[in-house]
Image (cartoon, rainbow, N blue to C red):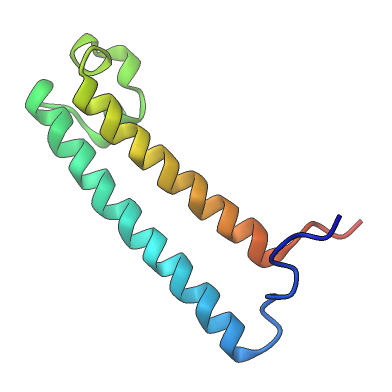
Length: 95
């Protein structure tokens, strides 16, 4: 089955610019959400590092916080969207 975005491959400059803009927007959104998640984590665990936020199961306060888990879920969704956009842009691997 052909991918739904198959007609929108980066073969011409306009398509490439659109893909670049989408990837840039998602990257900006991810960076903003990472900052938000880290700020929230530091309210719960004052010396939390970005690495701690990537492994929240080590901190009961983070695991138990509905707000932290919600914002971390938003971040995970944005990262998944970025991966999906990259995959759609480049298509299936040859071979």
